[in-house]
Image (tube, rainbow, N blue to C red):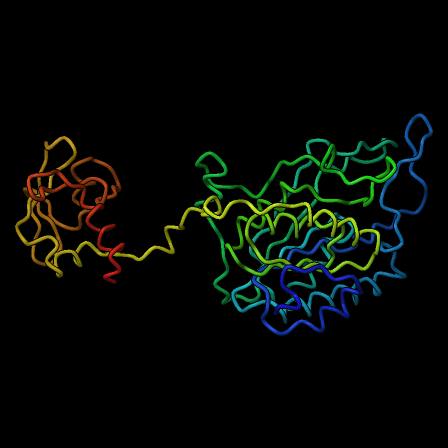
Length: 357
């Protein structure tokens, strides 16, 4: 994989994809040509020309030509994805439905569609349609059985402890981030780093391999490098390739000790309360009590606990006392260890940290 690790390659995407070994990458982000079918020059009310996407690389002879192209690169991406890998594709209303169709036909497993809502979109100058203020991303795993990466806790933390929704608000790439030469944009559809930061943080881990088969001016590789991932990008256009290469060389990796992310609860070992009893960490007859020491319960030999007439799991009995439908018994019950009050969850965490499971 050294040939494709932390490198960008100048050439035809399909030809280079065919050279990559099977099951090499953990994540693919693809921003393919949109086939936007712009038929005539767009002008502002002052008669000045709108610089939209009219590049040669976005033009195809027919829908069939575009479909054949998409099926080819999506097939190669599936081949080079690891079994638990996933892919993101982004597009506009011109092509995203065709991409979704091909993804399903190739037996990718669709996980989410995400709306990128632009808070500074280009206006609709003619006033004949709604302002096109969003693009759509599709996130899919390699297949239905893939155990794909999703860093739920990190995304929740990123969103002020609220679940991350599938509608994201980011501005289009502008200001200092927008690459220009002689005052003109180098690439017509440069994506903002913030968008890739969220995608890469959400669906990959440190040292994972990330591929962008249509690299453009290098946003995916830049963000992957910053976040401690290994990247590979493919770009056909020499002007874009040079801009991407220069940009990546200027990019610094975030310090290693700042790259750690929150561990997902689902990835943590599940320790039944009864295991603490079986291993003698808590003995039958141990008295558990609530934070205010107002209620207490005794540990039974089978890992259940008993409080007056109530008995059952640490969660069930705590909920009964609290008068709620549910309660996390691990963070409710305490015990006395060596004269000190100890939360029973700290016993579980100590047990896990000692790798006794």
